[in-house]
Image 1 (cartoon, helix red, strand yellow):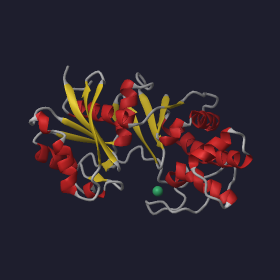
Image 2 (cartoon, rainbow, N blue to C red; image 1 turned 180 degrees about the vertical axis):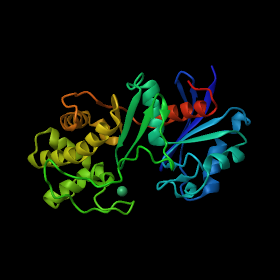
Image 3 (cartoon, rainbow, N blue to C red; image 1 turned 60 degrees about the vertical axis):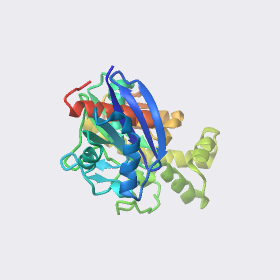
Length: 303
Ligand SMILES: [Zn+2]
């Protein structure tokens, strides 16, 4: 069975594997990501392709946006590749075709092909973790947008319309205050807790406290649900996906995602339709599967 050599590249580690057409993953190696030296970055990938001798294309899922027209990457986590047309440069360096996809898009593709979102025409995939991201997959195709940022719903104003809570004026990396990316992420849960108590507490602990019935943690989570659920209700009304995959660190808290599903259901214009959101794993496997699917699609070998 033909396989694709794939890489899932995050800000800390690179996972390399061969992925078969039916989605079977054979991991080859895990190495740390060189983030400041581009030659070291290329060398890390090259050393994991030596056995291929230039045969077969390579698929890469990366923590960064990919301009669909120019292939130029913008990555906060891996500064050495920012501003580079990575697929072209790596194709030359590795002597084979290289196709690069944003990690949230890879996650969405993997869920739409191999996950619970399979057989759904309009799929929204969300990342809720240290930041907020996402992707839109329609009929198995990623919607990129002109600059590759389609699905990035985190960079706009957060609102707490239901709870009327005074949100902390945290500045986002994009330059705007009170972004959903800041207040709807794990960091946002910590900021909301700090706003109420003047104390710092780690997100997993706050969620544990919420599950044990702690009143302050309950208020924090209620405001978080208001912020994220309100923003999502907007998107669901606009796009009307039939399923929403949720990945990222917060997706591990399945009771939190279930509460978010209820919040969205109650606030969309077609109410009382719970079961839209589901928790999905979003580890390296999802990036590898998405990278393989993207690679096949770009070669006209759609799965
Ligand atoms: Zn922002």
